[in-house]
Amino acid sequence: MRILYIECKMGAAGDMLMGALYDLLPPADQLHFLEIINNLKLPGICVRAEDKKVCGISGKKMRVLVHGGEEEHHHGADHEHHHHHGGEEEHHHGAEHEHHHGVGHEHHHNGTHHMHNSYGEVLGKIRDLPLKDSVKQDMEAVYRLIGEAESKVHKSDLFHIHFHEVGTLDALADVAGCCILMDMLNVDKVIVSPVCVGNGHVRCAHGILPVPAPATAEILKGMPMYFSSFDGELLTPTGAALLKHFADAFGECPQFIIEKTGYGLGSREYEMANCVRMLLGQSSDTEYEDEVLEICCNLDDMTPEAMGALYEPLFELGALDVYTIPLGMKKSRSGWMFCVLCRLQDAETLQLFLLKHTTTQGIRFQKWNRKKLKTEFETVNTRYGDIRLKISSGYGIRKMKPEYEDVVRAAKSTGAAYHEVIQEVQKDKKLF
Image 1 (cartoon, rainbow, N blue to C red):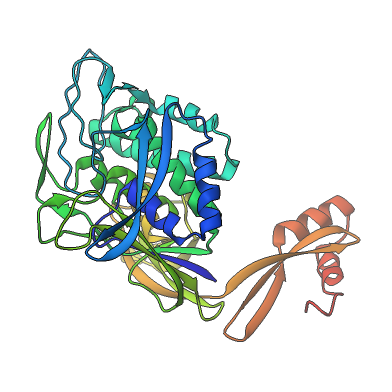
Image 2: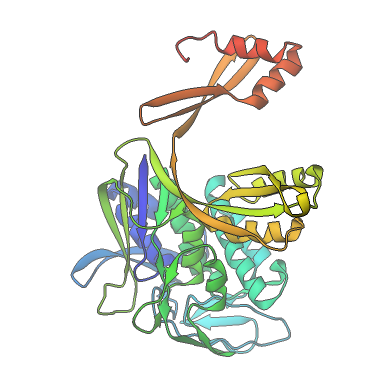
């Protein structure tokens, strides 16, 4: 299994993550990446990778040039925000860049021309990019995390949100770059360390706000974080959204064989190296462990049909498993323990769903370490049609099972009995 571990001891921003991912690529792939991103036809945008040292460590500093110049903002740490709203339309800001905004909707930075972008306009730009659908879907998911956080902070509808920093073309290039690089690296699992958010306060047009900024704090829900011993804003909304989207798990670095390290450097200088470090390597075997959250509540006043209606939407929201356990409850009432297993980053959404859609007055949850078998699928051609086999392996174990939906479909379409389809699949003794 190919593992990518992202270490965020100095937070993260879009350009820092892009730099670390770029640093992991071989030279030929680095050139290919620059060719891809500089041919996206983002007006006036040029992405360059520069070698730079910080605290004696060599890494990559990604520079996004807009019409030949850099924006007046600093990625990676200690950002000051001067946001001035003009007009009647409400605008919501991330915390990634330093900006000096005047009245009205259009802004000029270092000779460049800027417009505010609504969430819908950003999605339109993404869909027009000459990229793989999977990469564009990743980009859309990242922007949705940011947009939902901003809309919650400002109590506004998602499609009425207008981005300043995270909607500008250079920020779009940061998100595009990270999503393209993740596709190029094609890792099996991404693990993100607890994220340092900085400390102190950040100044904006509305006053002085605590670090992490409100939108960043919303995105951080479900992610382990901690404060630094010194003041400064280290984590941006874009950095938080990229980490949350791509992370399969959060925690300390697992045991695996490191093949390469990559460093993405920020702009500000501290006593501690201002960088994101990434470790790329292979697990020593196909088996692996992770952490999941179990969310439970006891119910004695919901019908089985009402509980059953929750299964599908829970799975759509990211549940790994949903199950019920019969209980004997107070006053000799029969009831159920309703349980959901999920990844840590999906916990907040699923907890709120249970509170809203069940009759419970409260939920409880606990974290579990999980040891898993590797799962793969293989298709077997039978006289009843193609049947997928779910193959689980690891720890010297190998077992397989025909996919239930495929067997039911084959039986229904051919008139065969369920057990006849199973027997036909099991004829291939090499598999079983």
